[in-house]
Every structure is written in C-alpha cells, then in structure tokens.
Length: 497
Ligand SMILES: *Cc1c(COP(=O)(O)O)cnc(C)c1O
Image: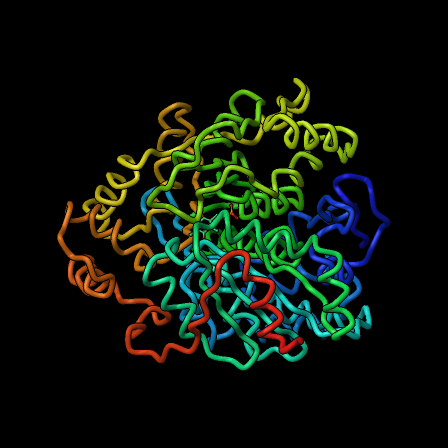
C-alpha cells in the first residue's frame, strides 16, 4: 500500500514514511492510494473477534510495510487493561435506538487516546524502518484534550521527546492539572501567555522556520507532529467503527445486512473521516451525521456546498469542537472527487485567498448521498444532557450531547428509523462545570475539584481513573513563556546552546 498527497505534489511513499513525516512536506495531506475492502463475510465474522483482533485486521490492510508480528505487538502494547479501564476497550451503551459508543476509557478520558495510545509505537517502528538517525521532537499546541493524550502516549518512548504548549488561560483547571502532573523523562509542558491561536501560530511558525530546523538537525533532532493531520492518528480510529458494528451484531441488536447511521461530534473532521473510511472498506452505513456546535461551518457546508470561514469564532461549552478550519475535510474532498488533486488545490487556494470556496454540483451531490450536517446550540446542548439524564439516568459530556442532539434533529427531519451509533468523545468529568450546570442549573461553586465532587454526587457516575486525585498529584511542569519565547524554550528543554 502506497500513500499519495491530496495536492498531487509529492511522490508515493510507504506507510512508515507517512507516519514519520506527519504531513506532506510540500503542503497537503497523505491518503492511501486505494482503500482496501473487507467482504461481507469478513465483516460479519468480526462479531466473534476481540478489539485487538479487529485492530490487527484493519491495520494490516494499511500498514503493508509492517509485519503481522509487529502489528500484533503494537496493538497489544496499546489496547490492554493497563491503559483502558474496560475489557471491551470501547463499550456500547443502548439508549433506545441510539447506541452510545464510549471512546473515552483510555488514560486521559477523551477519545484522543484511541489513536494516541498506539501512534507512538507506530512511529517508533516507522523511525526504524526509514532508518532515521535523529531523535524525534514532537511539538504539540493544544487547546485541551490532545496535549494530555499525546503526553501519556509518548512519555518514556525511546528516541522521542515531546513538548506541549497550552494557552495559559485557555484550558480548564482539570485539563491543566492533567498536563502539568505528567510523569516521564522525555516530557515537557509549557504554559504560553495568550490564547490558543497565539500558541498554535507560534508552533506552526517553528515548523516552517528553516533556519531553526537546520540548527536542530545539527544537534541531532527532527520535528514531527502528533495532531490529526498525521495519518498515524487517523488510521487507528477506523478500528472502533467495525468493533461497534460487530458488538451490535453479537448482541442481536442488528442482523446481518442491517445498515447503521453514525453521528460524530466534529471539530477537525478526523473522527468522522475515519468512519467514512470504514464505510469505504465495506461497513454498511446508511447516513453520516456530522454534528457541530455554534461554530457550524460544516453544517452550512453540507447544506450549501460553500465552505466559508468568514465568521466569528465562538467559545462554547464543547471547546474541543471550537474550530473553523477542519483540516481533514481536505482528505474527504479528495476522496469524494475520485482523487481530483486539481480541484482540491483550487479550493484550498481559494480558502487561503478569500476564506471560502464552493464545490461543484457533482461533488455536492456525491457528498449529500451519505452526509447530513446538523448543529446544536449551547442551550440545546445543556437541555440534551438534562433530558438524557432524566430519561435514561445516563450522563453525557457536552460534545457527545451535540452528537445526540444533531441526530435527534436529523431524525425529526427525515423520520429515518435506522439504528444509530453516536460517537461519545469524552468522559463527562472532563467538562464537569457545564455538565453540572446542565443537571442542576447554575451553581456558585468556583473550584473545579469541588465541582467534580459535586457532579459525582448528582450523577452517581464513577470518577474516571485518569481524573481522580488530580489535585493531590505532584506538579512536575511549571514552565511559562510568552509566545515570542517559545523557540528559546524549545532550545532550553533540548539543552541546545
Ligand atoms: C477532538 C475532539 C472532538 C473533535 O474530533 P475531530 O476528530 O477533531 O473532529 C470532539 N470531541 C472531543 C471531546 C474531542 O476531544
């Protein structure tokens, strides 16, 4: 299996090269040259398989330059009972015809663990395969969930250093605590003055700084990235859509040949794109519901065919979806146009120049066949958490609530009775404040750890292992920097003069 660029501007490369490079050096994203498929028998047969077995089945189709033994080794190193609190890894909870696919039983309580637990092992093998001599430095700018998931995934991995930058005032107390108490000898965490945009643009500038890159290379380092532009983060997310379907078959919730809908709370379009790849591989999907919050660029795009980021950025109670430029949409457009790099180039040039582009009728029709876009307002998100709790005694986090509400709107519009899987992307305790507000109304509690305790009392839900006793853990990282000072910070961490 070879990989190609969505912009048609790079040679074909192997999976190992793709994972090590992160993104196409000349701009664009790597995608598989052709998508492998499973037969119906193979898919139905998965109902007797474990998460780990299905993981091996999926990964070996795409990682043809890894041996079967290597794949099994990385799968077992990632998806085990030390890292995940439940044996099934991604259990499904039934709320009538809605099936909540819980993707947050990993160490950091968000679905980012599903990929970031395995990606470091895939990267370590990739480094061996491409015979990279330099030590790899992973730079991460995070607005919350990716930072901690990447730290946990990469801590104490040989040959890799990880440095995470987060906006000093842009993350919740729980998220900050999670990051600054991280253990491991190769981890560094820096609070950056300003908001997430300042943080992210400075990190991007470092990636683009040729002189700085060369300095690092002479010192034996090479940069890489752990965000969802890296194929190594997208690929492991295909697995759990097959696992979920297999689960519903084995529990007689579905019969062979039954189709499903999949609703995904979406930010960077990574998770829903992984579901689309599963569909391309043969998973019987009727409709994808792309769920957004008030930053509803994608809802508009799916309705009108116009992608327009000329609008104000809104801070919401589902902050991990607060994004206007969904990077992985580029991969999706490349796929639905039948790999038309010329079109993709044109649209992304327009996006850069004018902040918007419009797809042609043919592409729009192709997308409409399987994709619907809906969004939930802040008010609707809170109401949904409240109603689901009252009706089912089940607590949703704010992001998952957006997925549920969007599905409900879709159902009201279409009366489609197909069983629907809703990707549950975070544990409710990660967003305790908003969830408690949804259940109880406004409250006066200020301290996030008091809020956590109060939410436990109200919801009766067990506190996620990764969030327990956070306030008592040793703070190991206290670096602070202005955004201008980030480069100096990197040098200091790597002990470069
Ligand atoms: C990252 C994240 C999302 C968005 O996922 P994408 O793959 O970027 O679309 C949704 N919910 C939570 C909790 C997240 O952390």
